[in-house]
Length: 239
Image 1: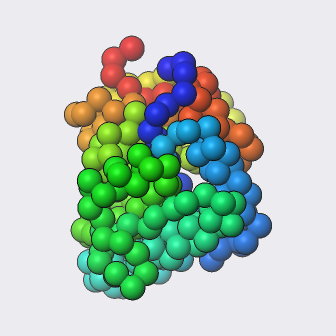
Image 2 (image 1 turned 135 degrees about the horizontal axis):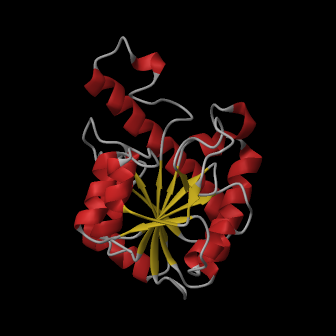
């Protein structure tokens, strides 16, 4: 996995935009993240971004338990658009051209998602932020990330997390948790390792799209992933 990737889909959780507040958007956090992403784009890597909405609303969260699931998921998908617009603003302050494209049409604020148009934006050096999930309830933004990565022909799906890879159990709860440097799609599914939802992992497996899970908290890691450096955990076919 050496060498710069031509095209990468970066999947961020909404929570990372909230910083320590754990809700909403932390201006300093999003500015620092935009700086890192802009540096990667400056190296010629074509970047697509999918951002979750958990800093505002998650359809499967406790706050949604009394709600109709479809209604709750629709609210979560709209939250992802808020995050995309915030990241667009932060990236453009770094001088990076961007486009927000949404699976749920809202032409006053973003372009509708059209695959060929998204690819053209990437080819012109624009970062494309994909909002609105897949536009379908019951699908997570992990699934949206896998789907968009495949549609745009990304070389890698980079999943940013708060830990430095995939472990056999939660390293924040268990001191003896063991980190994998490489693991197969089937092992992730069979062991229920929980780093991504099963539908997203299966989609990547069926289309042989490699996944890298890495720690977003270490500055420079987005660049390291985009340059093909061996950090985090690589999920792929049988090794």
